[in-house]
Image (cartoon, rainbow, N blue to C red; front, top):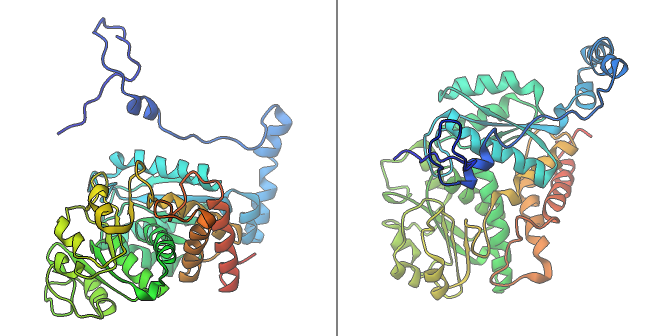
Amino acid sequence: MAAEIVNPRNDSGTDGAPEEPFDPVFALHRGGKMAVQATVPLRDKDDLSLAYTPGVAKVCTAIAEQPELVNDYTWKSQVVAVVTDGTAVLGLGDIGPEASLPVMEGKAILFKQFGGVDAVPIALATTDTDEIVETVVRLAPSFGGVNLEDISAPRCFEIERKLQERLDIPVFHDDQHGTAIVTLAALRNAAKLTGRTLGDLRGVISGAGAAGVAIAKFLLEAGLGDVCVADRKGIVSRDREDLTDVKREIAELTNKAGLTGSLESALAGADVFIGVSGGTVPEAAVAAMAPNAFVFAMANPNPEVHPDVAHKYAAVVATGRSDYPNQINNVLAFPGIFAGALQVRASRITEGMKIAAANAIADVVGDQLAADCVIPSPFDERVAPAVAAAVAAAARAEGVARR
């Protein structure tokens, strides 16, 4: 069903047509949500001669002779490309590059608002993996980092891997790693609240797409006791013959217990449920989880387990929604991660940098730790600086910082 376009100005226009209902969403988006703004004055001919010709020639010549100066005398080291093909947008699915632009603009202003990082939305008119890679490689001289966004699985894994191999700037697919980082932060604090460690926990992830795969790998890297992943056909296990290459890899890495069958069967006795798939988990399956379980049902707008149901059985409940406590929101991660990486001109974002980011987010909660506060608010001004500092320190420790 097509979206209803109403008159956001609430006037009758010039044709005498009756007034239409006011819609604040369309009003806010009219003309886009961002613009380019100069950071130097252009008041007179002297300013113009410095900012443009002839003065700019000196800077161009210097960069041609010493290419690394581009980071000091242009915006390159402070700007991120937000790149999409519009194939997996915000639960809307494959809506194409033009329709994805409002989301990419939104991502760009979140970068600026929360991390002080400039970002440029780039929506590509291709879904071919190699064409996307080649296009981004050719655009890369203008940017200090690349944030891949809303690209469908499994292509997103290959696109990120190939770009990381070919570029010497951070490449970060936020749908994978941002979600995983914030999930780990919340899980660390939930475990602390209930007197456990990550190693004590067995988790079940609903969804074997970009987020589910990344969360599984990342939680195991961080020390989670065990985790299994379920897709629409049930648990991703070694005995299944219908697995993609990515799911085969996940089957080898996860599910130490050797579980088979349905998601519901996997939840019996499980300590953690993480939902990144949509769908609905029956209440009986939630009730069968271990005592003091955690339910992180992050599908939007309808969580896999409604918070009212989850609270009957779980010690800690988190969602992807802003109208409930413990929102697992990627904005807690990506602005600070890129701010820290750009600050030290990192060549890439390592696993250690991601874990440092998760720990920093978790630590911000501090003495406020409670069942309804295992993760900070997206509007907590301490988050991005803490993440940036932790990521920068980790980049230096791991030898990928260049300043």
